[in-house]
Image (cartoon, rainbow, N blue to C red; front, side, top):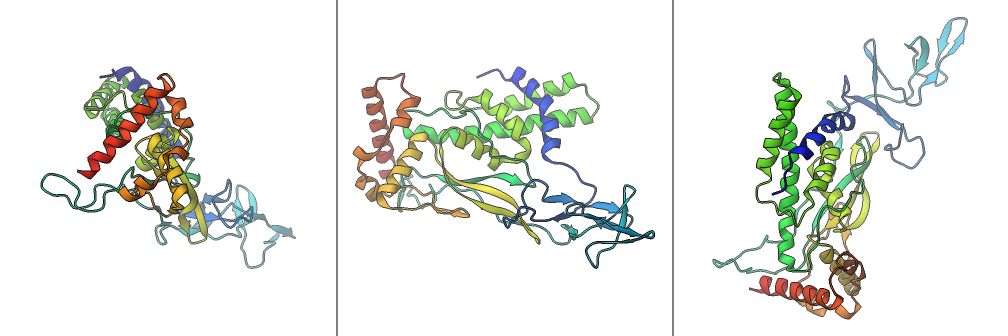
Length: 356
């Protein structure tokens, strides 16, 4: 097992600052927005903000105008708007403030799920329904709007294998455990500090919590050190966004489209990217090129179709038209003939396993 103490200690110092940076705290839950660039959304830089409390009123700084002063009588250039003192200057707000506690934002991010192992099985564990080969899961990450960019490209975190495709399923568990380990470390660290412990003691508590959460993780299927660095920077993005970024950075995801994932009453304030992510780069390549042969689509960004091939679909694929150049490049240290043999054996093994 890889020793994580030094990595955790270094990471934790940046963790709290990153959390505050990605999750600014506002005194109220009043917000306002304006589509300044005319693209139909309000997720751009400077297009949305928290409102400022002035007296008993909420003031929106976006698009605010300086009031006209005629004989010490102030009037707003926009009719019907009143003037207030903002830092010694009389201004009027032209955009209304919305209380999100009264009118909550609409979150339309689809939940992530894998279209696999959801059918009935017999007592021996064999699938009794339609088996699916190389299934993926729909996933998404927020990339613009009220949340910072949670789709940043990461270094390769997953290590692909040219052996059994089934072994790659362990990576989903490994990435979940990595996220949970960092979360456990963060909780232990902040709890210890709030109880009056020193930074050194709190770091030791965090390291211990992380070590406990890493039980059973295969260090050969996931670059744990790289994953820790990514999760530390993106902890405030949430688990699904972080996992999506790492899977995509490792070349495991097919991009579908962008969609509005959060709306205020005044318009779209958060955009996300939708993906189908797989347990290996090979799985993604086969899905992309296989679907193209069949004319099979990917669904919509809010309802992706990430299911695997049926046995009949898989057998109908023309593998002479599947370009594995990208995959070869990752494992070029082995001879081409061995690579081809391992890929063929891995695919056949996978096929035989789900047919049982």
